[in-house]
Image (tube, rainbow over all chains, first blue to last red; front, side):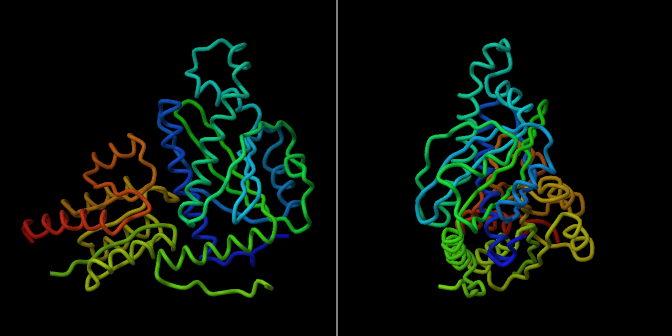
Amino acid sequence: MTLPTVLDELELDALTELVNIGVSRAAVSLREMVDEQVILSVPKLRLVDRANAVSILREREDTRLVAVHQVFEGDITGRVMLIFPETKSLELVRAVTGGDLPLEEIIELEQEALAETGNIILNGCLATIANMLERSLKMSLPEILHGEGPEFFELAPPPEAGDVVMFMYINFDMQLRAIQGYIVMLMDLPSMTALKQLLQDFIYRTTGETAPRHDTGH
Amino acid sequence: MTYKVLIVDDSKLARMAVTKALSTLHPEWERVEATNADEALALARQSPPDIALVDFNMPGRDGVVLAQEFRNLKAGMPVAVISANLQHEVLHRAKDAGAAFLPKPLTVDALKGFLDTAIGELESAPR
């Protein structure tokens, strides 16, 4: 099942643009860390349900995955994850640590470097979205998860039925290291409804035009 | 003097934001929109704009490549690349292409600064 009616076309466009701005800002920070240009792809955004999210990951990735996971709380509450193939994990750590360290040290630093990198990308992205929506979001500390994918969507507390998963596909390419990642946000339907309202307000502030309202059942 | 401005961005919201800022400053100017580099270049070949405002991160060719193509088409055309991606490499490429760089989200003040310079250039250039 896809969820085309949760956000209309302009709201989805606005959200994609917010993500684009957030990720672009995060790339500036990441560039300082890796000391080389980070080339971003154009973000693509897709809203799906939980079951679909699991099968998307299974179809696209046949390796084990790493996720940097953070919880956000505020007017909208949910989880955000930066997910990429486990095989790229050490590459990313090499990139942020300078690349001259022996393998044992890189492995030792892996958790910390992943948490820090994930934190910069996810915080950069969410802080921009929150600021532009004129709301504040509290972010938890980053946590590193390893797995096949499905377990990332089954974290405690157990999910309510009807959760919405927002997939944002984005590539972070560095000259020597092509690291493709996904940013995934999980929100429940009340948070999605709140986000829809915030996006409508944002669209109005930005363009002076009111987005077509939809009956949200409230 | 009124001018024709070409706005290029794959995001409709972003084009609407630029349009709003532009119409605050110069409501009488003609505005044309395109969603990617190919479409923008086709429009510009048909009827070249005086000024172009282009997004950086777009499907296909990026905004800096497009800025260069615009300036190859019409030497001295004032072009601004708009992005939140302030990496040195992007800023340098924009500068090398002869384009101005404006941070996203675009503010009316930043756009005004660019357009005032652009008007100065256009008015002093032989037409």
